[in-house]
Length: 309
Image: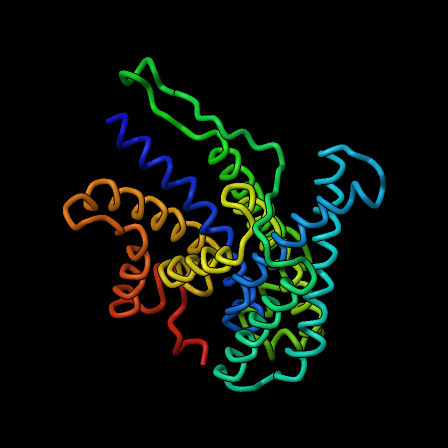
């Protein structure tokens, strides 16, 4: 039972990180109807910015303090993501209002490739580390209940706590603030929102800024765990099955879908992997998403596509 709990809890930790990335997809789709294939590139770009600014800040300021370097790097990377979000709305989305979904999809693919190239040009293509002081050593819990206890990675616990806190803050933002209510109004009906004076362009900039912040936090966590390298964009795109499972229009769906896929990946790899030669963790999420596309394409909590047309 102890080993099962270790696997289950580990899956929950990874699932929270998947959910955090999936939120970027959901927020942009809800507000603009755009399925943002650039979210993975945004995570990579933000992580590269964070890693490189943390190296450069001590050289610029002469202050060799890791906490100061990381905080300053986070602020600078966040400001850069805000600028990127503003430019995306001004230079791309504003000119594609009321275009076909395929046109918007291709636009986000173009944004993704551009950001990959820009990130490499500005920050280099080496593998970088983000050292934010997260403990790497594991701890044993519930030793009184299970022989040997349950082995938990401290880094995973802290990462999951950061992801959960950001998700909670976003939920409060959407439910309790005027801007959040305006975002929900735009998500429900663009034309109705415009008719009561809600400017779509400003809302889209806010949504892309929020998605950029989510990408920065996700990139910071994944960069600390895995290192900042260009495969990080592929890791981020593993949140796509989470979005399909939870529903493109549902914030709670992104959270629950992330947890389901995180736990499912770990349990299937541990308990079914030995019988099929392993590797289940790589494709489990995509097969589960395919099943949902066949039998429930709107996901667990999403709206039917026909209702949005």
